[in-house]
Amino acid sequence: MGESSGESATASDPQYTGSGSLLFPQDYREWTFVTSGLGMTYRAAGASEADANPSFDNVFADPASYKSFLKTGVWRDKTVLILEIRESDSKVSINKGGHVQTQLLRVEAHVKDSARRGWAFYAFKPGETEAKMLPKTLSCYSCHDQNGATDSTFVQFYPTLAEAAIRGKTFKTVNH
Image 1 (tube, rainbow, N blue to C red):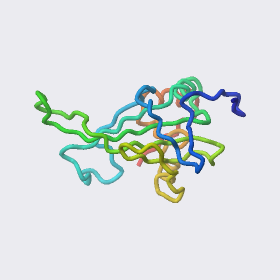
Image 2: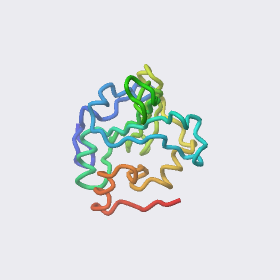
Image 3: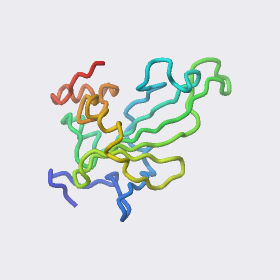
Image 4: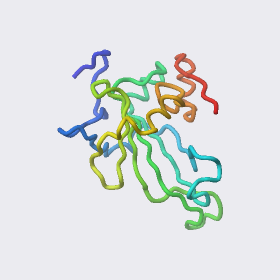
């Protein structure tokens, strides 16, 4: 099924239930790994609830959208970005320092779908197979609109994609 932009549907395009909930993309860990962050927070430094063992944020992009973005610096319609949030620990097995990823806390999806009013957020708890769209009144929407370097996404934290956005002239510098 073709898109109006001339792009073809892919196996990783978002799938929804009849009531509009997003189905959990079971194979997202086979998608393109974009980046990982440790202890990322939007609050003042030192205000994290888990400073001793900060969480890891792993970001994955569906392969078709990743490839398209590298070429154009623009997210295609039907893009799915996954944020996987995991706990960390520093005393695991033979590890004497640093942090390793442990238990899955939640998975969030950021989906660009023009048929559903553009970008939307969904949050899955471990084991959930579907999630309702988070209300557009939540601060995540305005934060991404104001602080996302490209198309309401935080490519400023994704070195490979930041380069593509700069080449594609879609990157805006965000400093606070």
